[in-house]
Length: 382
Image (cartoon, rainbow, N blue to C red; front, side, top):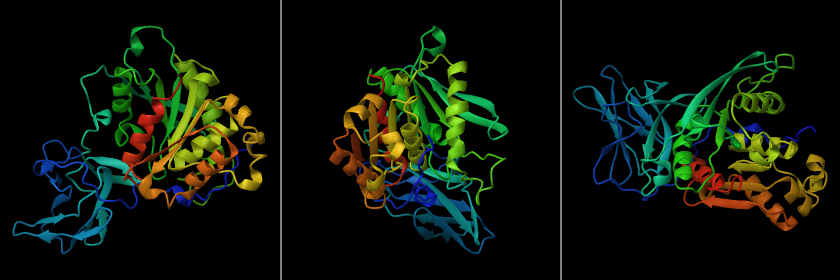
């Protein structure tokens, strides 16, 4: 079946939009951000959750910090520029430094692929968020898997989380396919999203069954097809073919999976949520669990009984095909991403069982998606 794509791509680009300041966490004093390069003091997170950034640029005429909002920096006698932001919402945020009109990354920060470039990032600690913090529990592994795609005619890379004890026996595991958002890549869920840490903690606490998690690059271009205007954000139909015809068979052949639909899930955030729900709805023979975090492939009212081979026409039949449909977003983005709330309302009106979660106080940001993964993973394969 040809998947129905009805949303403009622009609705899903550039994760990490307008935030709402939060006082959820309060360090006792200024603390070096955990996202700093090892041994570097700044940026620092202050007790009120503001962030102080310093940049050594003695010959620059103007330096500005861009962290959701632009903050002009002040130079001291040693040529070091400094600015302190307003209090920030807890979680992970991208930021940039504007040096005389040139946008650059902060040399003091680790680099993260986001907003379509390698960006600086700062982690604002969330009080009591043990679920996404490293604990003294058995650890799984993040593995790199490369493969050649006959569809895109190029080498591709995905990351594969294997649960603790994977190499110790012959157990077979269910699989979750987990997609990133627009402007990000296959590294994002493992780094910004802390997938391995979240899964390790859930499995150790017996809150989630041990599973394999696959994180692939969400962009795919068919060189034999008509070129798209922007080849970074390619035709999603090509990516759907890569997932269903190449990625899933690859994972089932290279890893000890339970290779059937009842043990296979697909989910994603923002752009990846649109991709995951579109692929999942279109391939219920392959996926029994589907989730969209801050993104979903909606079905218009006039298409309700015909879309995806009539998937939504019969609530009882829907439940037979899809064991779990999970939708989520942050409370601070609900007005912007109405396609999620409207789809939730339409499902409810139609009597179709699904789980709907709103992350309190968060917007289009990684804290929303970490919480969503944490909740979704606990419901899988049970």
